[in-house]
Image (tube, rainbow, N blue to C red; front, side, top):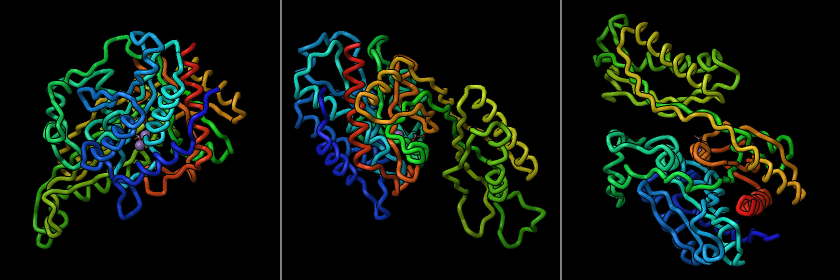
Length: 414
Ligand code: HGY
Ligand code: MN
Ligand code: MN
């Protein structure tokens, strides 16, 4: 059985983790930023160093192949895909996405170095903008469902920039970005390694999580519109204060979630007021929302309930309200056969494993719409993620990388 080079995997993760490091210790590699470009260049360099070939698709996904391994297989057959993302949330951690991206690279390097003749080709992938600076799971959605040009032109980023401007400035071609859906049958199967980003595996002392399904993810912006007025002279009962109404909306989010199910979650990570003067009653409040539920019915009910609550609050404060939500990403049950290959690989290596559901969204939930897909989790220390404290034990990194390689080989030869 072929082994990964665990030390090389660790060294690469440490080095990638130094790109985009902030004074807080967190990482700031939001998609298409200078830091993201630097990380992608670093990744290109690792591929070149290993003798691997990289193609960049129309939306910026990186697709890596081994010319040696492709010589030894039928490269026209649908390929086994593995990968994740290297963009991060603002002030994020060094393992979210990076682990699955670099471990997949390590697996392809080992297949390349060993000259392994597999029954199917293998590709490793870095998906663009997984963290949804422009749209949730952007890169994998582009290759499975696609974005018409009109949608791309309407996209704005977390910082209010237009996607087409930032993308073009980073060298992207918007016409190509509007034509990224993969031909049917390109992917035979897919497996992604990821940190759990939750407390379960650590709490139960389990090495490997075999992911059974991925949560549905919705989100967008609720804009409450009132009236700018003088902060000092306007009587309290004469105000149309969008900021106070936004506060009422935020305070209501736990109730809205609880009203749907125990597993429904909602948060708002960004709230901005306009015009933005401390002595001006805010005319507008832009409240981003991120909401999730494990089922299609649940996410639909959660979205409706949130919209209804926003309208109630707007009416109560005498305001107007605009709702601008993305199309929700559906929940994804993961493939039973891929799960069984992961489970067998863990048992073979003497590692404990448990089925687990993902409360985080992943590119795999888009890939699962076009090919049998599985995910492997390793423990997150303290269950923390999307923060500078995000951390995973190096033994767990090595375990995850090894189970990923065993699973890729198992999928390629099944
Ligand atoms: O938000 C998520 O669940 C993922 O980290 N993009
Ligand atoms: Mn993330
Ligand atoms: Mn991730």
